[in-house]
Image (cartoon, rainbow, N blue to C red):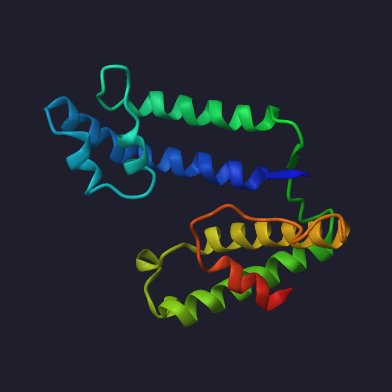
Length: 175
């Protein structure tokens, strides 16, 4: 079994962590003033509730910098696992893969529009931005390519591990 770890997913993960740093600072101030991590987790969004659920040896929430180190260590550990293959999406290398990514992103936009009236919303109110849809399109294209090149070796040929419920139906539209 191959485990594909796309570089663009790692980059997106790091960007999410870096973007949350500003809000984490305000939450760290609230923690320092005695607010409980449990209470703050109810109001936090994105990656911040995950951070607030990580506790140190004393049972209190760890600092956001400690959380970033744990996340970075996790990515480093993933890279060292057997059968893990890091793939860089190279748009200039393969026109077919680039077209597949565009087709997958377009199908995902259609799926989001149909299920959430996504395109009618202003950009700031959408469940994911244009760049995130493009990145998900790349992920689906890599999976599609894996299915084509390793046909018959295993079924179904790959999984994307996510809580997202839109990528599967979008993928089925194009494959």
